[in-house]
Image (cartoon, rainbow, N blue to C red):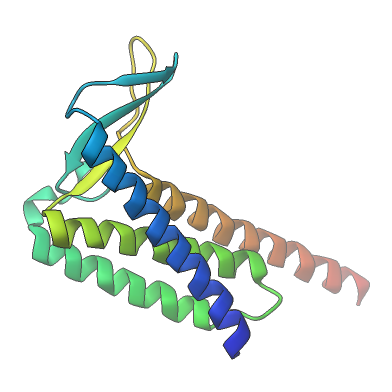
Length: 163
C-alpha cells in the first residue's frame, strides 16, 4: 500500500480505537454494573465484563493467551489488508474496522483483565449476548470484507461474460 492509503486506513483504525475506548470510559464511569438502562423496548445499556472472546468463548484461556491470540489475528488481518488492491476499497475499510475493534478489546484485556461490554438487544423472553462498539466494528468490518468478495466475484463474472 502506498503512503496515503496507509495513512487513511491507519486513521480509521485510530478513530475506531479512540471512539471505543472513550465510550468504554463513559460506561465505566457512569453505568452501574448489571443494571439495565432501557433506551428502546429492545435495546438497553447493560454494563458487564467478558473474560473470553465472542459469547464468552475461551474464557478459561486466561488474559495472556487471549491477548497473544488477538494480536496474532491483528497481524494476520493486517497482512491480508496489505495484499488488497486499490480497487478493493470496501475490503480495506473492513480490515481497518476489524483491526481497530480488535485493538480496542486488546487494550481492555491488557488494562482491565476483561473486555467491557454494554450493548444489549433483548425482548421480554430473549436476549442477545452483551457486546461493545469494538465488537460491532469487527462484525461490520467482516461483513464489508465478505461484501467486497461478493462484489469482486460479480466484477469478475461480468468481465468473463464480456470476453
